[in-house]
Image (cartoon, rainbow, N blue to C red; front, side, top):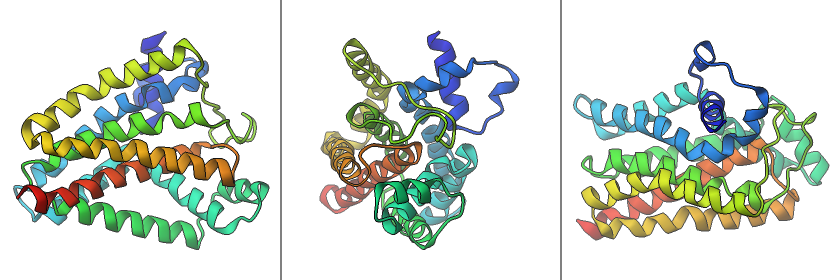
Length: 259
């Protein structure tokens, strides 16, 4: 069962044709958030490898853009679509019902375009400012850790729609009791290697940035509770990108402090 849920998470969060080698029951997709940080090892790992390899041939900014583009191709822009939809809904909708209606609309609006431009600009600028010796590790750790932190949104908030109204026709299973502790332990086990690698090769001084994504997640969840009364799949994608961006902006602050 656990293996099927891992397969479901990799199928859901990437565009790899894994369905050709494995058939997974639709019920397992309710649990994909449980293994979201595990998918981060794949997406963050590919991004880190592309960034590291491209840096041998191109300037850091070009290498970073290539790494970002590689993740977009791997995920199909899944999280970026969520960010754009959230920006359109929260920016243009006055009521909860109007926000949800705008977020479900497949067309992108002004707020969505602006959000993607600002996000992509800050993301690439902050990563390109990092020394190459730590950049791949920061990218890997940032992806895995931010997904682990973002996954707790389904514990803090109720789902704002029902399964029939959901764009992906999936409502994530909400944890309770023992399941919460199991997820905490799962996240710690999945993220620990990335954190250890960052601490060993970049230095323990960099580890304080691990505090940024959970703080961002808590604040963003409070904002969603106030405006929306819950979360949607788009909110999950947007939450990850905002948490990850906070992580990278914090690392960019570290550069002059550790030089």
